[in-house]
Image (cartoon, rainbow, N blue to C red; front, side, top):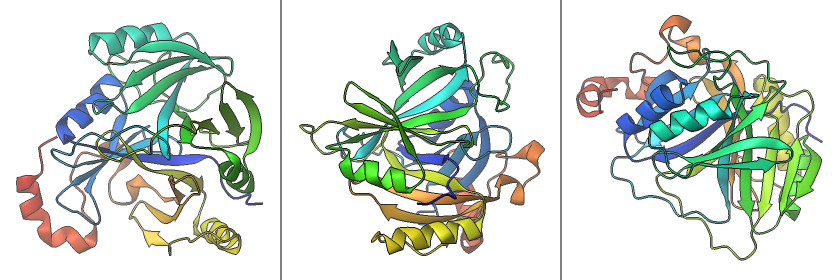
Amino acid sequence: MIREITGLHHVTSMADDAQRNNAFFTKVLGLRRVKKTVNFDRPQVYHLYYGDEYGSAGTVMTYFPFPGMPRGRRGRGEVATTVFSVPRGSLGFWEKRLDAARVSGLSRIESFGDKRLLFDGPDGDGFALVESNDDNRAPWITDDIDSDTAVRGFHSASLRLSDNGAMSELLGFMGYEKVDSAQGVTRFGMQSGNGADFIDVETVPGAEDAHQGAGSVHHIAFAVPDRAAQLAVRSALMDTGYQVTPVIDRDYFWAIYFRTPGGVLFEVATDEPGFDRDEDVASLGEELRLPSQHEHLRADLEASLAPL
């Protein structure tokens, strides 16, 4: 069994408009933009990161905004819902705030004993806020979102699959334990994790396959503290038969990727070196930061990328 994983690291999705995406996460949800950079493979496209003050593992939602990208189609083989943790008693505040911002898909449910507010992102992304009593992570505070209501980071992510057999086995191997099961959803949890501790697996055997586009999750990343832990995870996965990429330098973390049996792309990312490797914490996300191989494109990119 893998013991190095500490919970979620980040979730990366796709969008069709950078300005709308940035406004939603910074102005509506009140997250901090901790990095403004570009896609390693498509430098003409932003890579935007939103999270807590430091961009701590377990708090960071990231986006590739491809201008004009058609919306994805929901279905099996994808991350269906990304769930953020908020303080107990704050859902009323968030329901009013999201309604005032004309956010669609608002509805309240209860899941595994927790109150939950479902809502759509700007591209039809599946999101939820869940009330938590014991999330002590320090939030990012804004002028109109205080510590009694602010998002703490991820609570969980929900995977939508045709069956949960192979995924259950994989999550168990990755250090997750089965917590509960209800209404076709099985919850897996991480003991003593980083706060982003749960993965829910929803089985939808009759659903069509998901088709990625704007509003779709591209991949979900799990956290390890450092490169030594990452190499141990990579070796264990490969010994089990998974095809895992070599370690890739993503400037702010090191990453490996592998495709799961249900089709979801998993990443394992290091907590080091962090988003302050090229910016002071006080100014994270303010200036365009480019991977070294794309620095020669700076003038063109600054002229062509939408101002944020």
